[in-house]
Length: 153
Image (cartoon, rainbow, N blue to C red; front, side):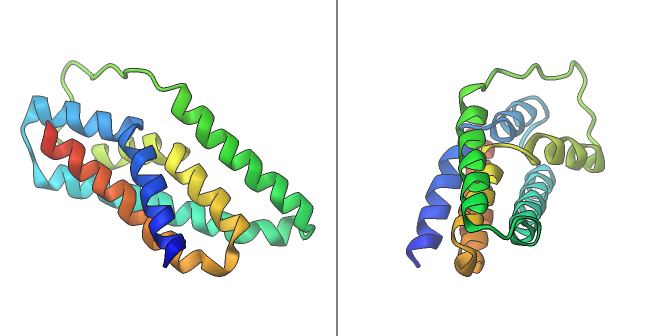
């Protein structure tokens, strides 16, 4: 239970400071609060989190050494920090499309290697037995961050 809460809080904070939350806020300010857009962003977030978990579960097959796995997890956590530190304001396109499929692709591109996914990847490598709890926290945290950014727009 503690791992679920920690994964939730860590990914919530990282996602709220990430580019996807800023993007949904900007688009919602320009186009209005569209629930379909929020659902699309949450779907992209969940897919990216599941991809990070799936990749983390494959690391022991590639690197059976526990020391090597620890190094990969450490690098993933370092990349999460770097992703947070290199935040910059993204320019919103002049006329963003209203297509949800295009929005899904953009949100997947923004979230595929962002800080919450690196955190989830590293935590899953370090604690493979807790992957079910980590994925619940890792999906719920960014989803709540997107909801908060959407409602504040």
